[in-house]
Amino acid sequence: MFNFKLIKKIIILVIAIPSILLLIFFVTQLNINPKINSFEILNVVDVNASGNSQIEELNNDSSKQSNISFQYKLIGYRSGGPDASVIVKKSNKEFVVSIGQKLEGVFELIEVNQNEVIFKDGDKLYKIENLVGK
Image (cartoon, rainbow, N blue to C red; front, side, top):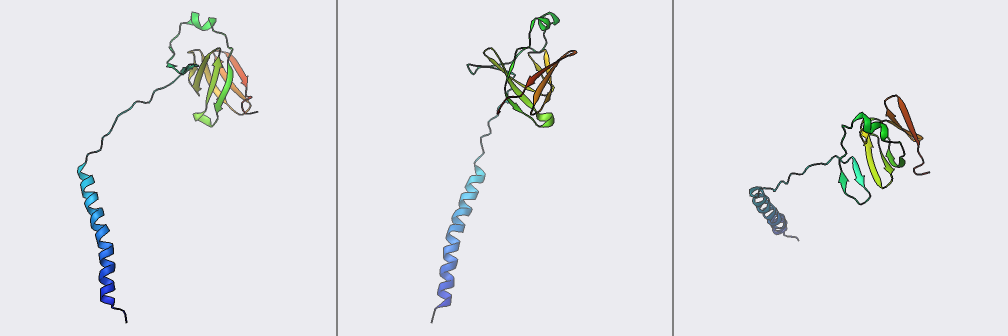
């Protein structure tokens, strides 16, 4: 018949050798300090067509505000309540604007839905029809 004692010793040996190797590996990894690199998340408000990011000045004079006309084209949006944002384009510049932020320091994004995007400049409302994905 089978020699159960010999089989038991072989099974224990097969399990013990990898266990010991893994324990040695674990102990050596505890001694190595991880390298933690810090990085900063940039708030990109304005992205050029060339891919360079620029942060627009949010404190514009009232004289500059009256000279800016609202001629933006909607090229992307993310609806979802307070986390909603849009990507609009004017000539060769693209702007990423979230709810509550101002576009070029003038037009505040107040609503994003599947049908339209609404910006506000003082008392004036500017609506862009949402044709993205249609």
